[in-house]
Image (tube, rainbow, N blue to C red; front, side, top):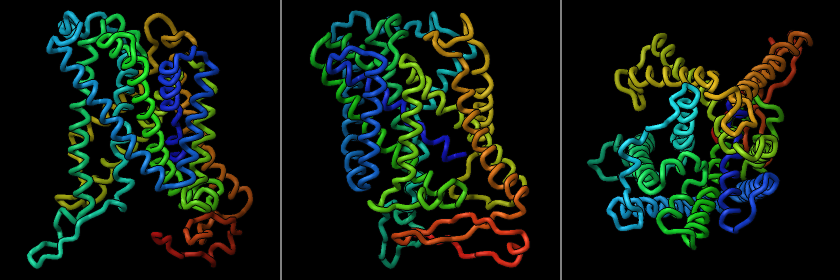
Length: 427
């Protein structure tokens, strides 16, 4: 279930297509947007499938471009608020920022999902915990528990700093947008709000037509590569437990030392989710389709924390221990976000673009989850019961030395006497 819900990458590709066509003065059409998004998606995933080293180098290099683009917006926003630009009254929108807003339940939860998406990836660091480079202190007086040699403490502190910094940057950028763009224009801006910001400050010229869109497209490429590297690892590790079809294919890193099978799965489903929805509103639909299953898993995970704490005795102070109040707030937020999207928006039963039922993304997310549950039930329970066999897990060694689990069909009489208990060791 987790592997299936982590393969929606099309929203980033759609943003790339929109900004690229704007930068190159290409007339936007539905087919052009979709196929340009598919082309960029294919190129980035091909790089991830061929070379881990090259993927990380590109991701890190484009990360600096993303930081530079945010610094550019922040500096421009400061100039606007200081009265150094043609914007006559930069504080006009800030006097009554929520005047004329849509306060319906559906609109509020949709906005909340966009906020969740803007922080998507905050928890990815835990996946790379084993790859954190630590500094070993060999001095006689050093303690073995030094934070310099503890990857958990390193990631925790870096996570606090990163989340705090990103939150501050997002706040300043939003203030800059409010200061430079008229409220009526801002409410209709969609995903091209950055271009409108540059046009309001610098006019229609090189900055708004070429420079800033290219910075955004570079950021999209870096984001897509980073997301692919993360999701491919999740799918591969899930396959290594034997709970996905064709575990040997999905667990193998042959021939380039990369998880090519999971990357291929990501490409196929992401392309389908780019091509099937209408081009207008595709970005919003893909984001919401991705976030809704996340809310289901987030709710179940948070509830599991309460159950585990009630059933087991935990140490008084652990390395990672969420405060009960934060867990409760998170559960309430998830439940509200799961229920409120089903409330019809103002003006009818369709989304703002008028082409799609307002709760279609909820249905898509639930269908993915139900399909995953049905697949597991049929594979692990129904078919073995009808066929008179049991699914027995065994460990196999793949070409290149990688270990993976797979389930074999063993008649019930034999499975009680024979069981492979070989542990799945770390590679």
